[in-house]
Length: 116
Image (cartoon, rainbow, N blue to C red; front, side, top):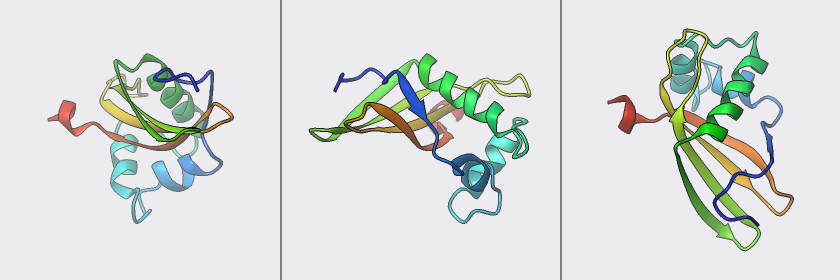
């Protein structure tokens, strides 16, 4: 494992965007969805949102790494995300990296410390 750097491959599991991060009716993700939808992202254009999440992780000014086992770590990337509205709110994306060195998106949400 390569420590604090992001792996070369990042992945967003199947329905993570349309059914969770951009679904205002989701019991746990609804407030996140309203936040992201408010900046112009859309469930009809999930690729646009995925691309913005990938770019945010790559450009993040802060990365916090938490090893959870010898073969597994969680990386939180904190920084602005480019949005369709042209505004760049600060968010936190969380990626799980396992032995295969693929970073899989766990969640994304507003970074309240920077949004306050």
